[in-house]
Length: 99
View 1 (cartoon, one colour):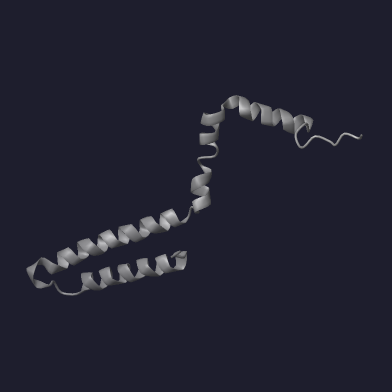
View 2 (cartoon, rainbow, N blue to C red; view 1 turned 180 degrees about the vertical axis):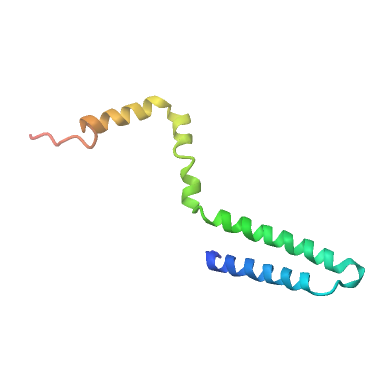
């Protein structure tokens, strides 16, 4: 299920609001307040990290690979021949021979 940026921002705001509410309330017994603050801090850091990762699309992440497998398989000569064919327009299907 795709997650949009607005949902992530609202989740981060809800976590920040819960953290602020916990900071202003009196301490709970058995060290519950510190434990809750630690969990909310970790959740806030995760939400911020998800927002940072959401900036790059999947295509942009894959685009960084950019033909590395092809260059390993076919070598630099492959790209040299492709560039030469583009410059001379020599590629494509051969013309039909008139009989």
